[in-house]
Image (cartoon, rainbow, N blue to C red; front, side):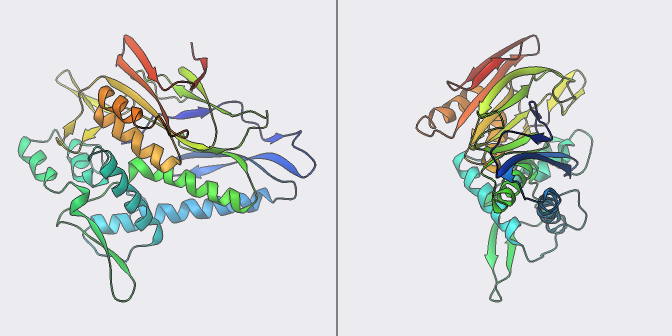
Length: 341
């Protein structure tokens, strides 16, 4: 499941007025099939080239661990039925995923990969699946069927059912944002915004001296250009922010629209009227996974989940629901900075 893009507003290459010893810079590059954009306040003597290299190295390591499109990655080897020793990145993302799987009662589940594949939204593309194919794939789904074990030599391996597969698409970019943020902090940055493919993590303030501003795309079918249609602008800081939705990835067969969001519990595309879910959380990996879970749950269950966060200042949600001709918005208080209309 991949998500709507969130476009950063008014990013500049260099920002002035940050004091004698600090300055805002912007670093951009290619990652995970898209672009990353980093805006950060760093010491004046910082080497932007060194910062970019460190970010690139970090994102490359994540790609070699988690990418289903990298034919030599650890994830690819796992999905091919091999049993490679796992690195810290794979173990970390697996453990985060299992935690959120429990928190969402299975709505977020990377082991749903066999279902993604048979519906044509995974690493392969097939025709419409039969009921028998869905049932067969469902038998391989569930984080409780997968576990990491440590051998006597200290190597860690994934135990999984024969034929099982994992797809980390719904958390990998958020995790990558968090990893890039740690790179920036190692270079002395305390104010930054990282965006990778639209997933965001931010801290501190922008060069304006206020919170960071991001906009949410309007979830209209066929809106493939990020920023072309703006839904709303949100002011955020010290959090991860990710939007998930269905309007960019779907197909129509015999007049029926099939969403790319698969419910791991039913084995079928969701049919509710939640069009997009934007989630704020303590970090981007958590926001990424929870946004996906909400798109599985639907509006009412997503609202119930948000209600349980009322005492958590780092969490919030912005939900667009209804249909293409009549979109409505529900959000936690205090999120909207200005209307996108």
